[in-house]
Length: 403
Image (cartoon, rainbow, N blue to C red; front, side):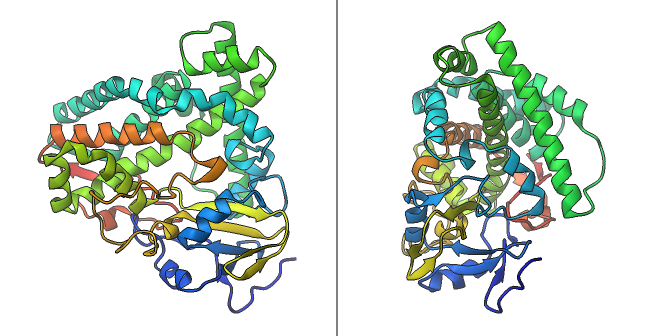
């Protein structure tokens, strides 16, 4: 039996009505000193943090846990309950988190990302060549954003995109959407298990026939020594793939459209390529593709004058924090010259996104190549029209463009 929501509680999470802006209610929530009380789908109370200073403080405070196996961890949709049985890098705490992150961190440095820049350029050119050869219009998602982002993520693991795509196609049931939360959770659990099994076979293959690639190096440094099991490494591969591909794809649809709909800002990027790193940060800040970061209190903690009791859930709204005028003056203004590197779209603290360097370099390459190679690139529908299914995250399945 679930507890009925109190009148002041907000049903969470709130859906975005615009793909590059968080729910407008966050403006009201930020005006209050304390976090906002809310209720999840199962009636469980949580606290929503939308102010930048509080969001950053929670993400750095070891009194707040990311352990998804704990009943206090706020899974915010029934379809995600299956993840409780599969704790991953972003949903575990030290000391295990420290061991797992240490095993991978050398493969995700800025230097490693820069080493991939020429290969990224070649991939972007290859995809654009195919777009141009096919006509003067198309779908930016299917022809560029999805294959580019998936390729980059696969390279980070030392795998071939074609192999992963073939496997995904072979496991696609082709069925319609689940009918209820329980069915959604069951389907999600099956998909998680299937993908984990795939990565288990992938790690076994790398162990038997190692090469000069990230996972082979992790095996030699951490699996062979016993610091990491092959099952744990397979889980790490899983989280890198699932958490890495979709945000980059989103930024190559919503982010590109954001620039196309603001020609004066796009002109700055085209005229001065040195602006690209700042433009990427500002675009990520505006879109905040992974908005919701769950935690729970290990002990009683006060945030903004509000006592959050041990076991209660907290959801940090990165999208809300990234529009906080106390940190980003005139936050709804898109300014590619803004110093926005302090945004929280990659999280902060010990769970700061491992792939942040790779993502930033990939977006610099993709934006730079797209706008250089396709100077007449334009939307053939508005971004709002393309965002047909408002959700918690700004996913767009298709984005018609012409060039």
